[in-house]
Image (tube, rainbow, N blue to C red; front, side, top):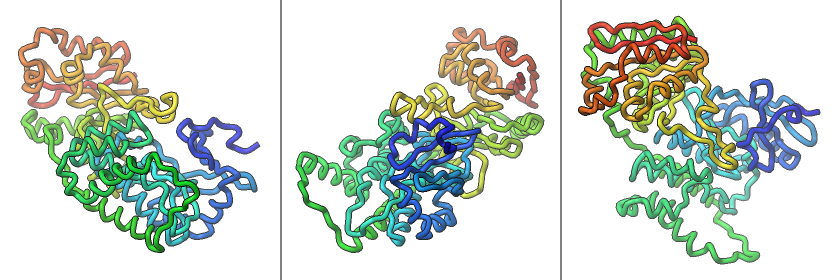
Length: 454
């Protein structure tokens, strides 16, 4: 009996006829089926696999079992997988660049990627890695890349919409894991995008060509390219991706720490209290909910195995990603709206699991968050406690009282609606899930931190 026969396949790998991914004893493995063994052997013997791993483009792996019918790989384990619609702009752009660079490199070894899904990449230790080891197939340099349209739907369409419309358009991928349809992207993009050559080529003209030829049968014709056609394609794609590099736009939340909510001394004391809390508990996985640009995530990362830094603001998440990029960081930036967290998606809503199916933290840190849950989200205390009680062991929350300028700004004269928003009520509510409660006053501030332990 093979190891794969003793374990359950992951729902996310059902589309690939050449193999599947499964989990056993807490680890993830990949099984390569009989119809793909020969191609994978060539992929290994060509030297391409070693080159891509060495260049940190392909996730490292080991072959742990092999026979004529299958090959089993143990890839380097990724503690927490994020889906592409949870990435920031530069995360997404880096993933596209890794995909295109792999294709350009693979051509020199006689290979190409058979598909171009953004779900074939994952964030790990400050980098975007390609993780689908069965995507490599031998290629004919004069045959068009069959995955080009998929690349445009999965990468160029989201990137153009994020650039010209809003970072929030990335959420369209939640409703269609196959990508954003090119005609939809073309209609959504402003007229000025027609004067940006990458948008014109990969979106607008591509969409028109699809409409023109979609109803035509190709018969027995085979489309051929000039000898350097594929090389030219990937050089163009990489050049066009580079032209999409842009500075992140600042937002209110990205500058939140710079606002006058604390004196310098008070803020330093808050940082010291947060560091003391994390150093005493040393959580395996810490979720920093409402992480902003990650200042407290960085503090927590010194005492945690992994920090999942989640925030709804795409530009704040992007700023954190750029800090973590290429640093072997144990911080995982995630674009996430706590009020509407990532649901299950794809076939039976199981193909891509929800955020809280993947994230089951030992500790949750919610600093300058609770009052937003109460007022902006209109959550009652029971719902707030339910959220933090997801943590297996502990939580650190910040209470912002009625007289705080930020709270006053949020309630805007509706204070009577939130009459229950008192420290003693919050503590009483939390004690139902966290028996051990400790209040830590922040020097020269009306705000307090509340340490919660199960």
